[in-house]
Structures are given as C-alpha cells and as structure tokens.
Length: 92
Image (cartoon, rainbow, N blue to C red; front, top):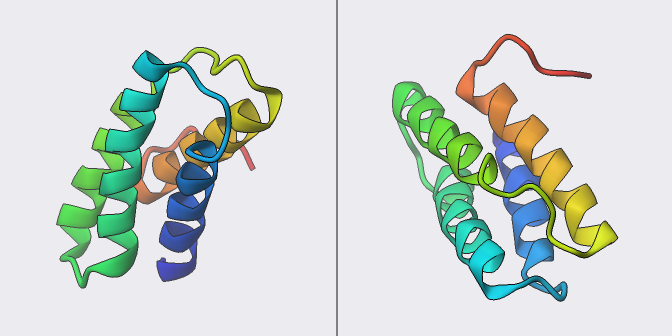
C-alpha cells in the first residue's frame, strides 16, 4: 500500500504547516516521523502494520488542533493509518 502510506505521510506533513498548539504539534510530529518511515522505507508488512498502529495511537491523543484544515488532515490521516494497521473498523 505505498500510495496509502504516502498519502498518510502527506496529510501529517500538511498539519505541520497549520497553526497548531505545541502539545498537539508534538503528537503530530511523532506520527509524521513514523508515517514518513512507513512511506519511504522498504519495511516488512508486519513492521509497517505495527508502525501504523503507533500512528493510530498517537493520533488518538489529538481531539482537536484548533484549526479546521488541520483537523481534516488529522481525520484523514487517522483513517489511512487505521487501514494500514489492518484494523477492521475503517470508514470508507
């Protein structure tokens, strides 16, 4: 799922360009680093799923960024990370 991984990373990179408070930005920054690793590295599928699960966990700490555009990116990133993690309850 290289395209899904790339889109995940792109959404998280985009949140870094928005006015987000520093605490939330820390969660997003960690999630972005993992997402970039998933997108740019040749990982074993099990490792990719595990790292995507960590992204889901990190994003679960973000209720709202205070910026509507960033919130949209977070929602989409959460959906994509959930898909990559292999969790069944992904909304299409």
